[in-house]
Image (cartoon, rainbow, N blue to C red; front, top):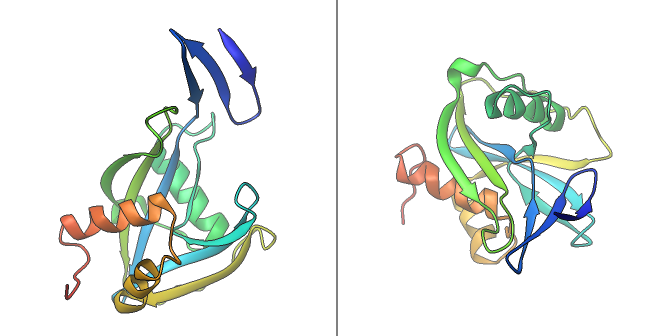
Length: 166
């Protein structure tokens, strides 16, 4: 039984547990010349801007998470990805204590310098390529707090796709 049905989320109560149902999302670690692409966007729930990897909600019309990540990367950065270039890294459970949200994480190493022009300029404030050192400094100083960005980075390192000098 649902206690709440919204545009994005549903809340059901099951055996005393409150469970938030989420359609899921896809995200992408984009690497170019050993630099990671991040987007800066305003997050209303936090009332702040965050640096994140491009990502977005899986729409009901998306046949698979790969479709979502291709659409979202183009919307947020202007980059048109070729599905053959994407590597599936795995999935992340964002808040398994109360939500079934899963984020599917992909990786791509761009060989050409991307032209960065978001389609929705109201959503994305800035797009920037950070060196691995700069990225790690942002993590160390707690300026990157987004779980999909942190988790995706760890998945890419564990596969040897990103090299650090740590």
